[in-house]
Structure formats: C-alpha cells, structure tokens
Image 1 (cartoon, one colour):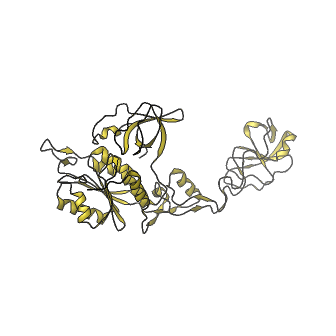
Image 2 (cartoon, helix red, strand yellow):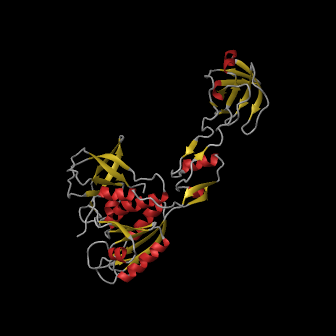
Image 3 (cartoon, helix red, strand yellow):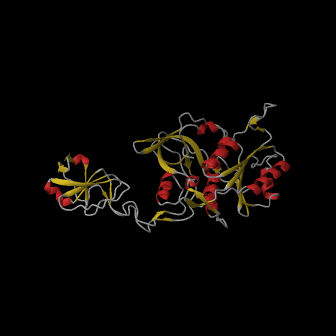
Length: 405
C-alpha cells in the first residue's frame, strides 16, 4: 500500500535539495539574456562621473538669472570638453549629454530663453541645479547594482553594457530529457492503425515549457509500454541530461512500467511517489547522484500542471537563482465547491480589472485530467489547499499565473 504525502510535504522535500555543484560559464552579454547571474555586479565608477547636462540649453550660474541678459561665449557639444569657463554675466550653449562647463551650476533650457546674436535673454527662470545630472545619479562607485542569482533581462543587459562588461559569469542551464510513454500514443506524423491510439502532446508541451524557463532540452519522443524499451530510454536520458522527465506509466496498472524501472533498474532513490493532489496524485520524483527523474501522469492536463509545479521547480533549482512561479491573490466571481480533500489545481480564466485579479470558470469543461484545452486563453491555476472549504463569490483565492510561462 503506497503512502501519499501532502502537497506541502512534496514542496518541502524539493526545497531542501542542494546540489554538490552549480557549474558556471562566461557568456557574451546578449547570449546571457535569461540566464542566472553567478556573481555580484559592482560599479567600478560613478555614473555620471561628472556633472552632466540633461537637456539642450545654456550652462549658467544660477544667481546670474537676476541679470536677465547674458553673453554667449562658446558652444559645448556632447562628446567634447570646452575649455571656456562660465563666469559672471556669461553662458555657454550646452547640449544633452555634455559635461557641464567649469563655473556653471544650472542649465536653463532653450524654451526659457530668446537669443539675439550673442545675447541670451532669460524669459523664465529655473531652480538651482536644474537639468544637471549630479555625480553618481545613475549609480555610485562600489555600489552593488545586480545581485548574484538575478535573472538577466533587458535592463540588466543594458546596465552591464554601460559598465563596459562584455562577458558575464552565469550558471549553466540544466539539460532536460523529455519522453512520453504508452503503447496507445502516437508521435507527430505517425499513422493511426486502430481506434484506441491517440496523438501524444505531452512531450512537446513539456519541451516548450522547459525551454521557455531556461532549460536545454533533449527531445526523446515516445516509447511503447515495454519494460526493456523504457529502461533503455531512461538510462540514455539520465546519461545525457540533468533532469529526466517522462509522462505516463506511474499509476498502478499492469503496464505502468516507469515506476518499476525507476525503483528497481536505475538505482535511483525515490524521494516520493504519490502526492495528495489533483491532478497528478501518482507523480514520482527520484534522485540518482546529482540527477533527477520526474515521472508525471499521462493525461495531458495532469502532466502539464505537474510539469509547471515540479519540473519548473527542479529547473529553477539547477539554475540556482531566485526564480519562482508567479503566485498572486485574486477574487472569484462565483461560488466554487471543494470537490475532494486534496490540494487541487483548477484551470480558470483570469483578468486584471481596476487593480485586482478576478477569476472565473466560464467555458472551462468538467471532466477528467485529460482536458488540455482548459489551459487555452488567459489562464491561471486556482489553488485549493487540502483543508480549504467551498468558495463563495468574491472570496479571495490564490492563483498561479501561467501566461508568462
């Protein structure tokens, strides 16, 4: 008799996993996009290093605005340094990005003046230091700008470029091998020979999900329910990948061979087999040294939900960053019953309206854990904990946002 653990226990087990090593590599900036940073990025100088103009205008002494008219003595284009000095009664035409000339402390914009020959007439005054970027406005020397464990997005790449960092140290992304098992399933392009055969989508759904979350993927396709074929496939997958993910073959049927292979042929340590959740109660996760096996149920919706929760969690562990599923609070538009005493993940519609997330089940179909079409559209997973009660309209619920995955 198998002992099922709670969903919370399964998460605690995965969160306690630490790897013996987290390999790193140096990548060129644009190649490092979406990787996890393996070092703190510290500013080696002030930015800007000198007071700099933030607009096109005229560099002046603030107190000289009371003179109303100033003499224009020079121009100061961006990228050059003028030797002229701003003193009483004079100004220098200065452009966006130019260093502020010596002696000036304020930039009066072109909209606030009129010019007649070399005479500047001030039509509207400005506060002291107006449109002047002070030293260190962007960042200061020795400031930690990007912390280790951060996922590198467009802003991080831009900051790294501004620091003249062309290559950056990142964690090596894990490799995930993916396969679907079942004698009834057909891969893309295979011809159906009898009515019991169905088209497999699991291995392709999971491939895209894994790739979009930073993993390198080895697509192993489909394999029949034969213990020797499954053993060969899983052995090859573990040899090549950090994480092996299969769908199907983890229940208690006569032809559910995946669990037998994991438990008796691969020499892996089973972390858990069976979680009190819906869908995915027969999920199995095992460890062999620094590698992991995630054996998911075969139904399409069930395998996808479990992949979102468990496969992505394992990918994030290998990437050694601060990545998590995006979980938010929402309000439910109508009542929704708690159907079984398990942790339940239900596909729902989600909308963001007037500062709040709202969920409903309009158009979502009732049935088995095979209905992958319930995940179409702007969908989230509504979480009902093992001990939660029936939901009423306007109750606050917890949801996992799926769109960014």
